[in-house]
Image 1 (tube, rainbow, N blue to C red):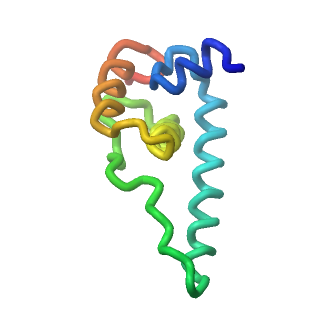
Image 2 (cartoon, one colour; image 1 turned 90 degrees about the vertical axis):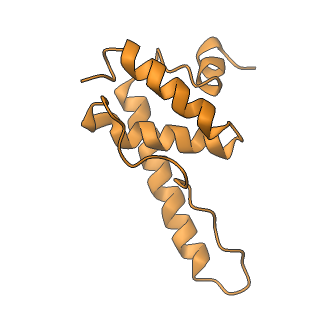
Length: 103
């Protein structure tokens, strides 16, 4: 069973996301990348996909202290087959309307 905030997250609606939640995604992404680095050293395994492929390194109008967490969150959503173009549109809308995100 999923709650309202979980469903909002899947829809890339981050109105109730906290900085600490974004930090959790950043840490998860760091470990995911470490795991991919380890897998790439093994013979016979497929080359791991780049978690951040297609995502911008920098988000305009986004506070620097949450940038890596936001980027990691969108990377996780993409792993769930959420369309990157849709995510970029939602990022623009959310970041302009929420004071937590905007500078």
